[in-house]
Each structure stands twice: as structure tokens, then as C-alpha cells.
Length: 313
Image (cartoon, rainbow, N blue to C red; front, side, top):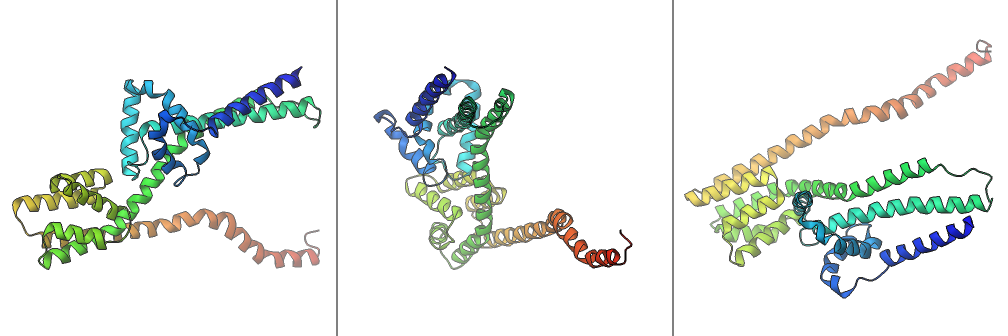
């Protein structure tokens, strides 16, 4: 009887998981399929969870009007924009991805319990049943990890994007300085920097800013929007100084050159700070791996000699 119940529960669970994970989304969610597919298939290992994410997103649409969920959506939206995924991911889809990973982790724990019960009922292994408390602890921990991992993934992506922006910023400022000092207008200098600058998120953001200007937005507003999307003090200071100089009619050449020198100095100070942290990070592997091996090589001949002379017998 227990074996039959386990087989039925396992079969139903497998059918539900198959329908959620490998099923196809219906026509009502076709408009949401492209953004999720761009994120899950091309940019993360979450591709098998795509239909499940779409299913959960449909079910949680009615909860989007609650106050706490709106606050969480605002925070997640800011994180998504700073990660450079505003055109590929929405806050509701991120919430659905969290729930899908939590349910997947919990379902995996229950599947392990079912398999263990099946093995124990068939007396394949001479072991007692796995404690229910251990299953609950493992399942709860896995579910919490599933809820936490998408946000962690986005934060790591944002940090990588910020490093790429700060690395390319001095070179872009040098291009702007040379273009402005050679007699080009600010619009031409920005276009030249967006075309010839190093590939990366800064170049993409500048191209997006130029597209907004061509669509009719004011240049100052487009620059402020670009700085808000990147949310970096270096970019915000550069944009604020450039907009202020343009409104006051000041010369942009000296200002851009000073900005480039300041950003380059900040990069040098950051590299110096990272280099100062290297000895501290190397302390643990030195104490745990290198020093014991060194002492072993040094004292092994001494120990062998003492054993041969009978002093350690």
C-alpha cells in the first residue's frame, strides 16, 4: 500500500513538473515570452524554468497592486536597470523566477524523500528512513537559496557592468576632449565617442542616449537619464558638469580634460587599493596550504634522522 501511494504521488508530481517546466506557454503569454527567453536562454542557466516562470507570472499579476509588492518591484526595477537588462527583464518576471526556483528546490527535496522511501520500502538498502526534520531543513534552505539567487545574480552582473563602465570612461572622455578641442560640436563629439569608443555598456548607453535625442528628447534630459540608468558617481559628476557648462556657455574642452584626469586618477587609486588588499587575501592560503608543506619539507629529513638514531622510538 505504501509503495502504491509513493508511486502515485511520484507520478503525479512528475506530470505536474513536466507540465510546468517543459510545457509550452499559451497565446495569452506570447507577448511576455520574448523578454523572458532573452534572459533565461541566452544569459543565464535558467532556461528550463521559462514556461514555469510565465505560468507563475500570470498567477501573481493580481498581487502586483499590494503596497509591499509595489515597493519590491520598484527596488527590483532599479536593480534591473542598473544591470543593463531593462529591455529583457521585468520586476514581475524576476519575482516569478524567484518563486520558480524556490518551488523547484522544494520539489527536488520532496523527490529525494520519495525516492528514499521507495528504496527503503523495497529493502534495497539496509538503512532506516531519512528523518523528516532533515528533509524539511534541507528543503527550506534550498528554497531560501532559490529566492535569493536571482537577486544575487543581478547584483554580480551590475558590479561587472560598473567595472566595465569605469574602465572605459577615461578613454571616452579623452575622445570627447579631442573632438571638442578640434572644433566639433558637442553633438558631433558625443556621436564620435559613441561610434569609436570601446565596446561595452558605456558605449551602449551613449548610443541609447543619442537615439533618445534623435527621437526628440532634450540633450540635457537624455544625458541625465543616462546617468540615472548607470547610477555611478563618476558618470553623474561628468554629466552634471557638462550640462552645467553647456547651459552657462563655458568652454567644454578644459572641463572634459579635467574630468578625464580625475577619472584616471580614481582608477589608479582603486588599483592601488586592490593591490593593498592582495597580501591580506593571500594570508589564509599561505597559512593553510603553503606553510605546512614548507615545514614538512624542512623537518622531514630531520625526523627521518632522529628515527634512524633511535631518538623517536
